[in-house]
Image (cartoon, rainbow, N blue to C red; front, side, top):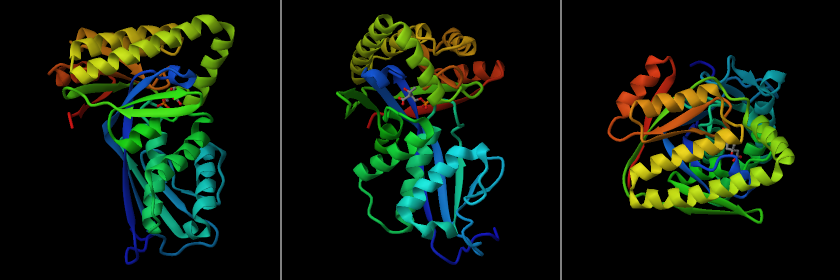
Length: 324
Ligand code: PMV
């Protein structure tokens, strides 16, 4: 690599992806949600550029996310959110970030409901604080991540970056606009198979679409959010008890409600049925929906479920969360 000066200091960071077991969308309106970190994630390396061009940096290289390297100064509408992110970083870290190369390597596909933007936000802040040797508390990290997630999604509930920062299963609920999160101590290891189709329409668009539907069917949708809240409470107990069959069944019920809210789609339903027909205990979409990914709970048959997805031409991978 000739564009970086490796004789100088460098820093690395990592942030996982995430899945939502129950409560996506409904969480925006105050329902409880449950999220788990993924075993897969995103890595960032930060180096000083060897020959920084005045006012051009930082250089952003993200082989799995961006078609080309981008320099902060060369504005391109196509990468709008990335520039807004860099603008924010400039406001926090100042001009000193202009001579840096930020290299991102991820196996979390963007816009698949797997927390790609949140893991990027968290890893960026961690790497830069480490690079400058600034102290970073968890609260400060949450605060910065929320600002970056707001650039990506406009009004994020906060569940994505919270579970990624905590890096353990959490329940999450907004009461009177105040975030309440608590850890969930799972009673058994849980292995999920994650299958992805095309990118979803974007979290911001999906949330706006649902908000429009809610304005037309306020009472009906509000009742559904209430049901999802109850499912989340049951699911939390099932996770604590390690009652896998019940977790799977509740995931299936949650998927029914997500479909009724209009955030599923034909391919996501198909993926859920492939999973269930292959022996998954339960399956549901995860994240914004309308595309993206589903999660299937396995029962010692993760490879079999994964192979079914692959046979149908979908991408799939396995992630296990172990009892701590
Ligand atoms: O960005 P995604 O696809 O991981 O979805 C986030 C979950 C939503 O509930 C749809 C939005 C939010 O901010 O909670």
